[in-house]
Figure 1 (tube, rainbow, N blue to C red):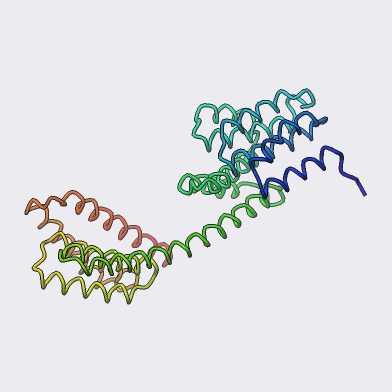
Figure 2: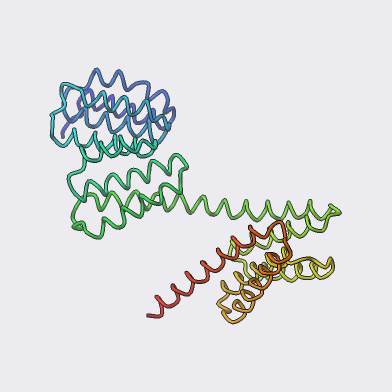
Length: 312
């Protein structure tokens, strides 16, 4: 049985401390630097500092400075894998911090092949998700997926990408479930408050938001029930094209979600007519309506393309 070295035991304690107090764990990096004796020690220390400083704390400048310090460690073997590993860590940190030029330089110094590229991509995604930069993380997940198609299945990076991506998926699923409930409850509460207001347009807006929340949560039948209430309110108040457009837009999306393509097409035609009416009447919201119309058209085209793709 191989016993861990004193440095390895210290590193393990720092990892455990990071679970409870990452700031304190990161403060121990200087002490660990002084105790690191081998090329592998430096490699593991730099990786831990990059993880705690970047993914956990989002302290980009401090993490970058420490990894750069590791690159000057006398035990580090120049031009070997540990140095390239630290360069890749720098690439991840600079990328997540938005340092484009520095990220490019680190990428050139640390990436030798597609496997290295995939490793950087998935670590960028993991670090960005940890810092709640979800939209930016998607780009790197997509890059990792594309690169995996060209990597031999026995390469270790395949397991790494699969594990990290699965963890991100579980995290996203939990966020989605919480977000769905929050969206629906907040929309219901907003409508409850707006029913007490004398301005019918505020009630209309709140009812629309509640219906939209139901639709986004996949509760299409309930959403369409609220669409009927919206239309009744519009008739009662002799609403203009603006309010009616958004209701028709919602109806179109709901029918599309149900697979009722002919009914969705009729609602889409109504949207076109109402958008034109809003523009002709000089409605102050006609630019927003035009943007919403363009988005609806693009979404319908995307849905049509998907249907044809799956049919094929």
